[in-house]
Image 1 (cartoon, rainbow, N blue to C red):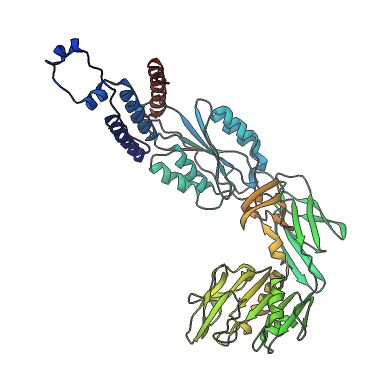
Image 2 (image 1 turned 45 degrees about the vertical axis):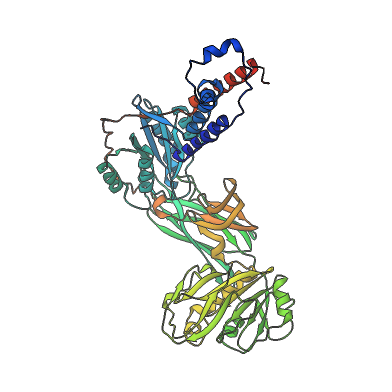
Amino acid sequence: MMPFRNPLALLGLLSVVPLIILYLIRPRPKEVPFSSLRFLEAGEAQHSAAWSRLITDPLFWIQLIVLISLATAAAGPYTVSPGVPGSHLVLVLDLSASMEQAFSQAVETATSSMEGYDRISIVLAENVPAVALREGSPEEASSVLSRLAPRDVMADLSSGLSLGSSLTGAEGGNILLVSDFISWSGDDPQSTRASLEASGASIVFAAVGGAADNAGIVGGWLEETPDGLKYTCRIHNYGGQRQISVKASGPGGDSVQVLDMEPGADRYFSFYTGPGLSTVTLQTEDAIEADNVAYISSPTRRDLEILYIGDEGPALAALLSLPSVTVRRSGQPAGADLVVMAKNGTADGELNRYISSGGHLIYIASGPNENPDFLPVRTGVLRNDSSTLWARAPGFASDIHFEEIGVDSYLEASARRRSTTMVEVNGFPALSYWTIGRGTVIYDGLEMGGTDFSQRPEYPIFWYNMVGWLAGNPRPADLNRKTGEVIPLGEATAVQTPGGTVITSALLLDLAGIYNLKGAEIAANLYEPRESDLHDKASYPAGQFQPAQGTQKIMENDLSPWLILAAAALVLLEMAIIRRRREV
C-alpha cells in the first residue's frame, strides 16, 4: 500500500460525486429525426442516454482524472527506496572559555576530519548546546567553523554528545567530539560516550591544546559598607612565579597595584566603586583573556521617601533601619516613592489614584476578609494550621530561606487573574504582586502573628530588597552575574550584548562584559576556576569509528509533483477539446 504524508486529504476524492451527478442531470441535446435512419435504429439495443454521455464524453473522464490527481497529490503520496549509502559526520565542538588557547587547533582538527563525508552537522557545546548546522555540505560546514569563537562559559559536553547522537537518525553516522577536556558541566563525557556506544553510536574524542600557564580573576563580590560599595576579587596564579599589575578603573579614576604571585597562590584585590561601571584588569599576557578582566556594575541608589500608614510593627522598624530611606507617618500618598499599608491603615480614593498614576504599594495583611480592590489576591478566613512556606517564584526575595520559617496560622487567599505568586503556604498565596494601572501592588501575607519571620535576621534584608525592587533601586546582585546564567525577560526584548544586539525573551549571558537591558547595565563575568586552570586536563582514549555495517540511506520519492503535472496537462487538453467543439 502506498504511504501518504497527509491521508486525510484523500477525503477530497469525494469531489467526484458532484461531478458524476452534474453529468447525469445535464440536459440532453435535442434530437432531429431522419426517416431514412429509423429502420437502422429499430434493431439496436436501447441504452440510458445519461450513462452513454458519461462513457463517451472525454471531458467527463478528463475532469474525473484531474480531481482524483489533485486530491491524491494533496495527500502527499511517496515511495520508499534504498538510496546510495551516504556518510554523515556530526562535529561536537567545545566552545568553553578554556578553549581560547587551543581554538585554532580545534578548527583545524574539525576541518581535516570532514574529508570523505558528504553531510556534516555541527553541535556547539556550550552550557546550553545548540545545533549550528544540520546535514550541510563540507563547504557549508567550513563556513560555519570560520565564524565560531569560544564563549565565556563552561561547556556541557555530555549534553552536546546526546544532541549530536540525535542528529544521526536512523541512517547512523559518526560523532567527533573536539575538546581540550579541561572541565565541563553536567555528566562525565566518557560515561555518556559509553552509554551512547552501547546503543550503537560511533564516537571519537579528539583532544586539543595542552597545559599552559595562566592567571585569572576567579571570583568577585560586592559588599555594601558604611563607606560605600566595596568590590573584592580573588586572583589565582596557575603558572610560575610572576608579578602582575592590577588596574582598577571606574568613575573615580584609575589605580594600579603590583602583586607578587607565587605558583598556585591566591591574592585578593579590593576597592570602593562609585555608581556606574568599573573594571579590574590583570595587565599580563597569558593563555586566556576572558578571566583577565572583571566588570562591575554599581547601582545608582537614590534617596527614597516612604509613607507608612497604620499601626507600628516590625515592618516600620525594618524601614527605619534602611539606608537612604525617609519614612513619614502622615500626609497624602502623592510625592512618596512608595506606600506601606499596615494594620488599621485607611485606604481612600487618593490611594487608588496614586496607584493608578504609577505609585507603588506594599499591603501588609493583618486579618481575614480584607479585600480592597487594588489587592492582587482575595483574602478569606484565617486558618490555624502548621505549615511551611514554598518559594514559587521568589524574585527579589531569592536570598530568603522561606522553608525555614515557622508558620502556625495563615490566611486562605486566592490569586487574582494576572497576579504573580512569589511565595505560597499550603497552596495559598503568601507573597504576590501585580500591576494595576501604571502602579504595582505587593500583597505581604508573611507578617501575620502566626509566623516568626519578623524575628529572623533575614527580615530587614527582605524589606531592603523589596523596597529597592519596587522603587527601582536594583540590588548589586541583580546587576552583577556569572556567565552562563539565563535571564527570563517574558517577551522579546532588544538587548545590547558584548557581541552585538540580540532580540530574545530569555537572555543567555555567554560572554563576559556589559549587557544593556531596558536601561540597566548588567555585568557578567566568568569567575570559574576550573576554566582558568589549564593544567588540570582529563585524559580519555580517542577511540575509533565503527564500520558502517548495514547502514543504508533511505530515499523518499515524492509523487505529488508528478500528479500535479499530469493534472495540469489534462486541463490543457480539456481546454483544447472545448475550443475544438466551439464551446468557448
